[in-house]
Image (cartoon, rainbow, N blue to C red; front, side, top):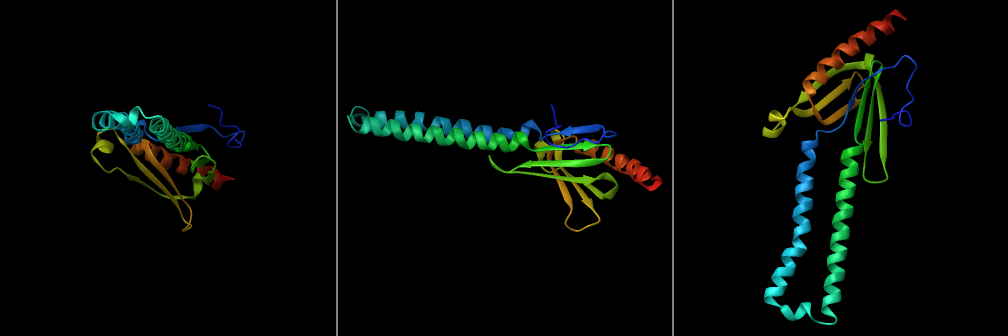
Length: 179
């Protein structure tokens, strides 16, 4: 994927990791979406068995179709917004910095970056059965300043990324101390 439009890559900079959330973390949203898609179908069979005259009325049938259409369009919009938020959250780790790209809804994005030599602490949090079994979790990167922290949410293999970040930070500190 081209990231040149998101970050200005320096000539000596090499992308080490290109991270997104683990796909398994989107399954609950997908499950809710599928269940919500089945609600009008279940309502149709319920109304057809209890009040069949509602489905044959000249006014009631178009009104029910209108409400079902509005419901489906709302569900699709909700799902699309959730998918965009899931898919466009991105973390890029280079040999010089971390770029955190977080999507907030459909029309809002925050891009922040952190130089590797400023890293003070890297913490991994894995909680829950699925996170442990499928090896995904949160990675917290903290700097010496109180307000600077980047959170990699639900990334695959967070322990491996943590170890690589520590090594990259050490190499970057050596590079910056010699210059």
